[in-house]
Image 1: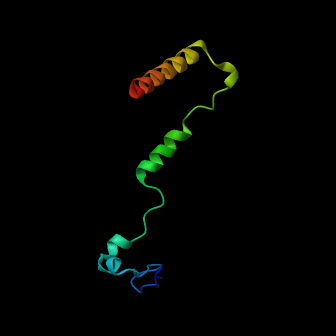
Image 2 (image 1 turned 180 degrees about the vertical axis):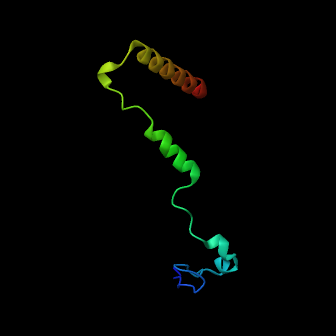
Image 3 (image 1 turned 30 degrees about the vertical axis):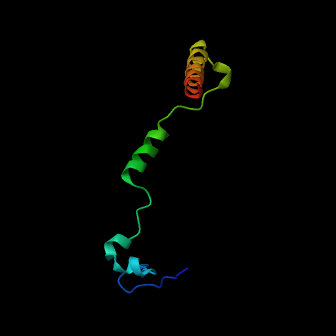
Length: 82
């Protein structure tokens, strides 16, 4: 594997170690941001979610929806196999 050496163009910048990377412009080789705006928005939405469900409080509607999804998947698999 080729090693890259520090480049004098900027702090922490590294010179491309592969000939193809050497042909790319410097802006392409800049480090990516840690979190993109979409990821930050998703993390903010995740913080607003409710607490995990208490399994002792499963309702009849939950059971109905589970059985409906199970039967739909079963029928789709059986139709695929036949």
